Image (cartoon, rainbow, N blue to C red; front, side, top):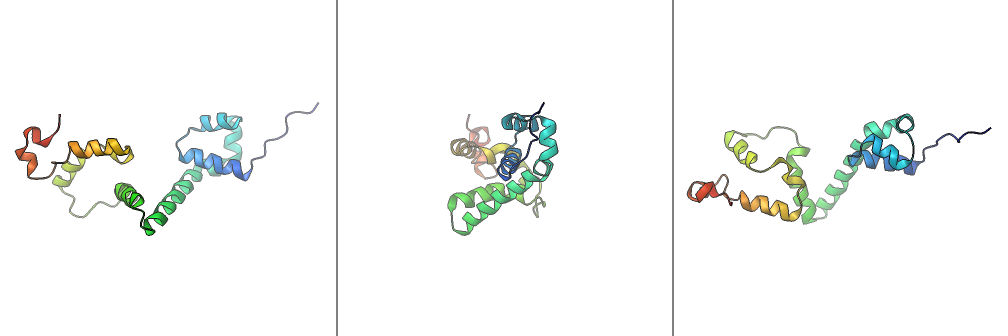
Length: 142
């Protein structure tokens, strides 16, 4: 009596697993999407599950910087939003004033859509300026 044939991962499946991991999918969800068990996923896709996400993120950054070199304004803005995430070194002269201003914008602002990012910018436009002391509520829109 023959059982199920052994699972054989393909290069296309390896790319999918690495992309799914980079996209934030859990290993359970990846296994479910592929129609395999979690142990099978772990056995055959260990490299993709551990380093695949980093490789895919690096590929995405490479593609983004290629667009920056071509002068793509949207890509340039994206890189500027990613600035601190890409360069983990502390900024020179980052004192209390810089920290206070950064605290007024949510940490997730870089992942917001266009309209949400505009709303955050509009609400915090006076932060760190002379207008903050003149406008009611410190310049905050209610």
